[in-house]
Image (tube, rainbow, N blue to C red):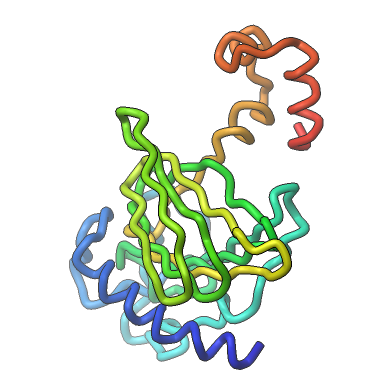
Length: 220
């Protein structure tokens, strides 16, 4: 695990440099704005602490150093993110980093980030990645370790581990400190309150039994 953590560092630095010129969030008005997470907030970014209280620890995190629980979803994947809680110095910087772990044949299913574009670097394994543009054309690519792929902002995309025996690892950078994420199937079939069955039946051309089965499989 220690070796894997070290191998992430060059990729994280590269992603940070790439994202520096492609931020989707407003530009900061000061050098930094260390997030004050001691109180709730409802604005674009967290309030700042006194700059005189800033420390090196506010700009570093070990949040991505260990894999997440890939068994927590039926798809066999885990995503761990940096945020203003585990990396307060990220506040107002307009970027997020993500660690993506996938089981053999694990899938990050069709999803979108409404507030960010994304660049992904394959660290381990063989990843089939792709996105669908607004004309319904699918762009796909098989990534090997060290290779990268860009997902345009707001478009539906996926990552699939082609390995049947080994796990896969990728690192992503997103151009917002709060990119948002919506998995298409989960959003449609497990929403609260529930989406009307007639809407699901007509949208996906399925039966009542299919709706019930899919909801059950997705935990809805």
